[in-house]
Figure (tube, rainbow, N blue to C red):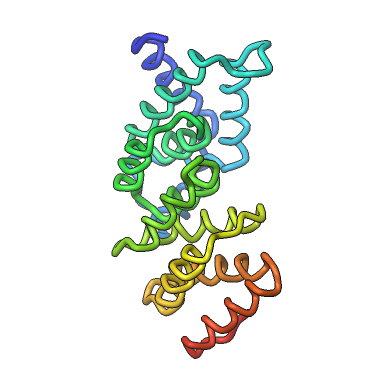
Length: 223
């Protein structure tokens, strides 16, 4: 697909957002500090429906998406992410093929993540599905910034929910970072970290005991 076709598709998508406009939702987001250059207030289910329609359109009748079509979705996602528009960034995380996106692109997206909402959507829609999801999540847990940490804990929550067990080194690293995070001054970091520890504890009895022991050292209650 040519650069021109990508540009035309982005333009078409942006025009569609006008039909989804929800002024009350957009205003509520602004009042909560979610500041975007442009925010149409489109709901997440509507954006998911739109992403599914685009993927179906690209896929056509094929059950498996050809490599050329995956490349189109990758290029389209990157182009959408560059737009400082809430809906474009969320849609980008829904369309990006997890098996194709390079770690370097994910690093750039993380650096450019503008709000907690985008961080959470990216973790749920894309980051948890990356073939190198756990490696990235560990990098983010060690970040000095709040949004990468939140993404990391959300990713681990999803991996644990799918039954993915860390090795011994991973267990120690995860719990060491989580102990610090559940005492963070940032409420969103605390919440994401605690939720991740809870999901960790649900992997089995040994994990539950490790989680409870770690949280007790902070003086907090284990939910």
